[in-house]
Image 1: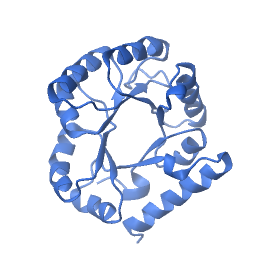
Image 2 (image 1 turned 90 degrees about the vertical axis):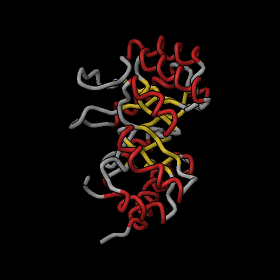
Image 3 (image 1 turned 120 degrees about the vertical axis):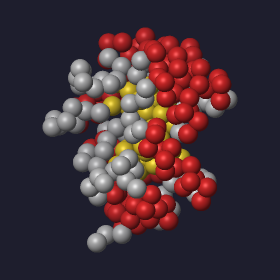
Amino acid sequence: MESAADKLDTVHANIARVCKPSRRKPEDVILIAVSKTHPVERITPLLDAGHRVFGENRVAEAQSKWPALREKYPDVELHLIGQLQSNKAEEAVELFDVIHSLDRPSLLKALVKAMDKTGRRVPCFVQVNIGDEEQKGGCPIAGLPEFLAKVREAGIPLAGLMCLPPSGTEPAPFFAFLAKLSKGNGLADEAAGLSMGMSGDYETAVQLGATHIRVGTALFGARG
């Protein structure tokens, strides 16, 4: 059985390998360990191995695990990578350090209100519905310039763009398209990030410019 430290080393080695041809620095790629559905006893070995950036899908699940963990590991950086309901905005702003799923005006309004109330300015990625899938969250591609303008006007720290390519498809064209959208909307000039890539395709994502990759299975094994 591979230890948590071994799995972590393998992922970091893969990141370094794919960064080399494009002369990217491996440390510029932030590895988010996706701990959703995994209990505290499976998260702790990664923390003990020195990893500090984690991702959760749901506010309630994160609330049940992370406040206690942060007492022992206060330097943890917690990312919300799942869809966020507007009525959970204040709880999300209080708990998370980065939000990856800002995708609609109603949520933007709720987050602004929550940030003003709590005094926390949490960086947010705008999630793009890159495959134009009705069942998925994400800002429509056609509406992205207008929505980005609203985010900037609202004064929320804009972390960059995030996407989830359609399952069962080759992800590379979608990753490349997200990078193109970032550049076309002036985000690349602002050194904004690209949140894309998961366990099965993070190497491709890094090759195409990902700054944040969301890796669960490769670090934790199958979901609990």
